[in-house]
Figure (tube, helix red, strand yellow):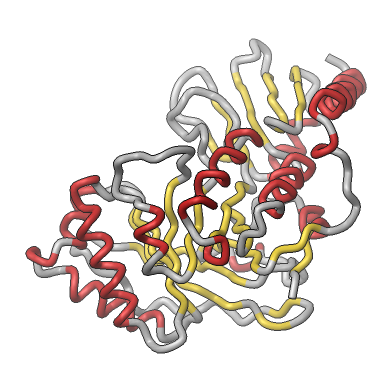
Amino acid sequence: MNFKYILAFLFSSILIFQFSFGSIFEDNDAPIAFKEVWGYLMRGEEKSFIKTAPLTDIFYFSAAVNEKGLINTSVNPPFKPLFDGGEQRIHIVISDLTNSSRMTLCLNKKYGVRDKLIEHIAEVTKKFDGVQIDFEAILKQDRGAFLVFLRDLKKSLPEGKILSVAVPAKRAYKDDAYDYEAIAKIADRILVMAYDQHWSTSKPGPVASLNWGKEVVKYASKNIPKKKLIMGLPLYGREWQTDGPSRALRWPQMEKILERDDLVAEYSIEEGYKILYDEDLKKIIYYDDVRATKHKMILYAKYNIAGIGFWRLGMENKELWDLITISK
């Protein structure tokens, strides 16, 4: 298919979508203001950081919980970058994303690991402005132990350090380990991971559609004080094929794919790009461009929340940063 016809199709799709859904999708040239703008930076990818990006907080990912239930306390901040108006705060992320058994070991005092882990986290946090707990595999039965862990960790942190917690996106109450309201009573900030609506092993679909994000922020803002609420945004898309899990896509990869002549593309503000490509159209991509991301930011700004957080730095189209400003 000739690429110029694809572009024409994309442009017409945008116009149809705008006409159908009304004024919320009209262009607004003014930058979107947030008190806090977070960015996650992977260890080893420090060179991808853009010093002119309007970020108030950098989350260094990560000090992972090891097989003994402890962390490496020798992790140091990567740098102290500057943006217009001041220095970014740098936080260390403590992570365990998949191991439920390890979480049970770490969170329950009876196993003799929990207090040492808290001691380690407090030690490494001395070098940073704050610490984030990103435990994504906690079992429902460990909910109470998780809350007590957070409470005791908060008490153990050096004075002035910020405690934040990353929680999964929810559109309604779910009987799981992540009680928004209870966690918010302990933590200084909560990041709602409003991405992976469709994930690496799921069926194909948008990483974070606009209507899905609307439901997530509506629920979150009712259960987390707005002054503590940070809404997460993806800087990546996903590509699925016939067999195996999907892969995450950065913007430079996406740019190259859009230049191919063997693709069929659709576009909407709701879902961003949806692309089928290769000879038999066996690969499918969902990807939010800057425009689709912009409309999620407009949505979240309407809720007057503390801010937004991007996963992750180095994946973005640099034009994104022109759309954001830091409010005083």
